[in-house]
Length: 185
Image 1: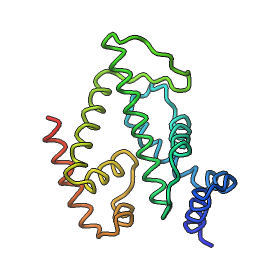
Image 2: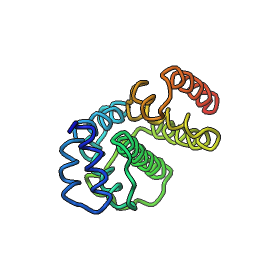
Image 3: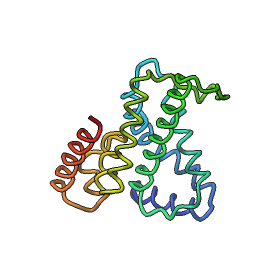
Image 4: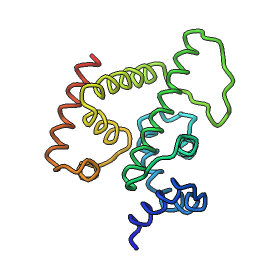
C-alpha cells in the first residue's frame, strides 16, 4: 500500500474514532506538517517565541477537539491543518495588538506566548480580513492564496487538490494576489 493511501485510510479510521489510527497517522504526516508550519514561521520575525512544534501541536489539538471530519484525502488533511495554523497566528496577532492598545492583560501559557511586532500583527490581521472578504466572493481563490502563501503548497499540489489544470491555478493565484493587493492598499 502506498504511503498516500495509508495516510488516507488512517484519516478515515481516525474519523471513525480509532485513536490508534491517529497515533500512526502523526508519525506519517509529521514531516509534511513541519514543512507547512515552517513556511508560516519563516514569514514571522526571527525572535518569534512560538515555535514550529508548538504551532503544529496547537493545530492538531484544534483538529482533535473539533467535530468529526469525513476525510477524503491527505491533501484535505494538510489543507485543514494549514488553515488551523493560520487561525492560531491570527489569534495571537490580535491578542498582541489588543495588548498594545492597553487592553487588560490576559493569562497566557508560556508555550502559547508570541511576540509579533505591531506592524506584522496589523498586516496579518488586514490580510485575514481581506482573505475573508475574498472567500465570500470567490472561495477557491481565497483557498489558493491560503494554501499557497501560508502553507507552502506548490502550483502542482493545488492543481491536485482542486482537480483543475496548472494554468487555472496560476491564473487564479495571480488574480487573487492582485485583488488582495488592491484591497489592502
